[in-house]
Length: 573
Image 1 (spheres, helix red, strand yellow):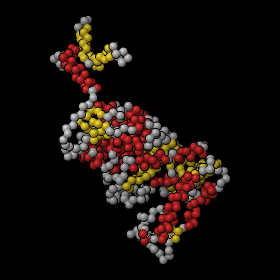
Image 2: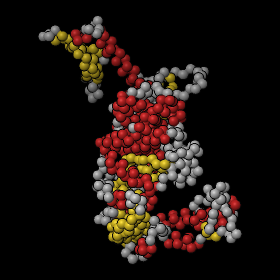
Image 3: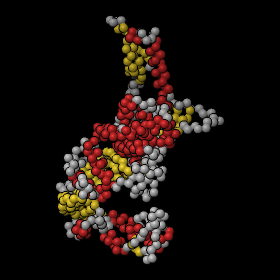
Image 4: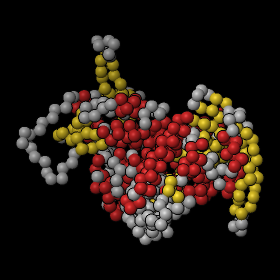
């Protein structure tokens, strides 16, 4: 590279530019040139430099030296007996550059920086948010763990642990605004399909045993005695989370639906939606509320066959009308008005009639699974009957319903052995077996085909998998923070992390499972070898596909710190 000086005789001015000469690849004898930097007229810089031409001549030399250095092989010299200082940790993650790309496509950095000006923080909110999100995906742990390992990433970490907790307070205040912001960005960048939305509820337990109005004892999905919080999540038809809401741990699952639907309708401008959910949401109040929203929304809910009224049970077991698809699957449907119980504003129960389509299907695979699960529970029940002293209420879960007249001591949880021996309820086992493999769906969408309704319901696996991801890969529980506002902020970072993972999965056309993608990005690390040169040691098919998708080279074995930062910087544009 050199400084090109173009003197104009008419104006008497000299135009400066930095030019690079190179040989044509197709014709090596031919020399070509290209302008690398157009500087301007020399006299425009006379107030800044005594000799503008001399100054920019040196700039051109420096740029050429850097070009040659970048093109040269790295020479790494490591003294034979060099020792590491205590506390040395030179391992860095580079895989997060893919997460950074999506983080900035969602404009989370803009949201954080805009609010920094409003709140006048002394810390950089965006840097803390990045740490919490990238750590949640790749190295989940407590906020203290995140902070102590903040140098895993090539990011600015000029903040304190106290700043992290102050940030959580801010994040709680802005949680609704951030959720709306993210929804807007998803619509703009990736598209939202809310013709169907899926809803489900799960709960998360705490490390601490302390209970309050928010962290409360309830029915834990993992059968733990710790206090829990309930989380209701809405997901769109593309498998991307839309929003969520937290509830005290003792809130019944069905009571979470209406507040969440109200919020999603008022805050996210979705138009008419059809909600798909399991039988926990199939209550009269939820159905009536859904049908009477301003846009008259719809629903596809599963309904317990075993708990249904006799006329429905008879319809399910009556083999008339079933359409068989092979030996292992059959279905039928009918249009049938149904009476539901709705709670009035005064708390009184009223009977209402809704027109519904009822779709029944039988799956042999589901039947075999139900039989297997029941046999395990019954075997445990027989063990309890034979050896009641070995079990307590906490260890009898799943088997108690098959034992007649069993009771427990309120204080110790031990089984109270009455004068008469415990007996297995054989008639209940026989009754349950009749309905193995049968599923009943009730829906407002009476014009949709049976196949459409069944396919809608089957889509619930997307949200069930999301709960699995948050609990296993993102390790959203146990929850280590204890203040309600910090709990809310913790789950917001989990929600953002889940959204980023799901977007990456969608970008890759669901070629890889989320757990596999996270594992590859976690393994994509580098270590400082010498003089700001990092060596990379892992590459696989997933990183290859992510790299091609996002224009990130994960295959190179050695890079300078400058090159690494340049690549990561390119993900932030």
